[in-house]
Amino acid sequence: MRKCVLAANWKMNHTSRDVRRYVDRFLKGLRLDDRAEAILFVPFPYLKLVADLLQGAKNVGVGAQNLHWEPSGAYTGEVSAEMITDSGARYVLVGHSERRKYFGEDDQAVNRKLRRSIDASLRPVLCLGETWEERQGGLTEKVTTRSLQVGLQGIRAEDLSTVYVAYEPVWAIGTGRHATPEQAEEVHTRLRGVIASGFGRAQAEAIPILYGGSTNPENTPELMRAPDIDGLLVGGASLDPEKFRKMIESGIEACGC
Ligand code: PGA
Image (cartoon, rainbow, N blue to C red; front, side):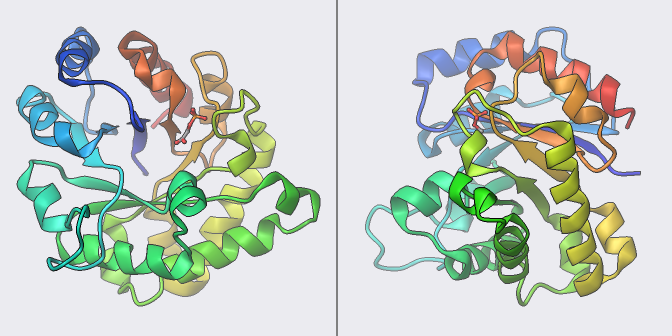
């Protein structure tokens, strides 16, 4: 049985005052048993603060939104996997579409980051998805398969159990236009098939595949009911702690994990 994973991506939002209030409100009444996991992906300066505030909260973790592929060195402005773990974080987003679009990250760079995070015992969430033009051009399968295959290159089968995948169609991110459960399920099932051919059926069945793109409390249940959607990566709606907690609760219920 796969875990339900509900993750918040704060992107470049909040300052320390908001962070304290957020975590306080978020944790009020939140109960997660071992079948589910919640993750807050926060800006680098707040990793330690959030990790400290989450002390004692069960099945809730904190993650970074990016990392560099080298362990250390002359890379001004960059942050290493070791620095992230040192801050108390256990997760990292790799290859988010905003990193790909604004900072030129390609599948090869994403693969280097993914391997580095595994070497540093960080759990990576490999993000991938097609643009609207690619979908219209019938390229969804090609683009998402390539991003997955290149992203996972050089990963040993035994390390795959530390990886999560997030399917985030670029056209759905921040647009208010989410993929339908059928559209997302089709891609998730195919991605699981790609993992099965590279690493084996058992590995593919065990890996959580999250959906991201304009999710909210209203569309959470229908998306989470799809058998191959194991969780959500939530942007805008996760900035409100009560809204995000509601999505966690209804998502877990709909998922039946
Ligand atoms: P959104 O963002 O929920 O605001 O569409 C999702 C994401 O970018 O991870």
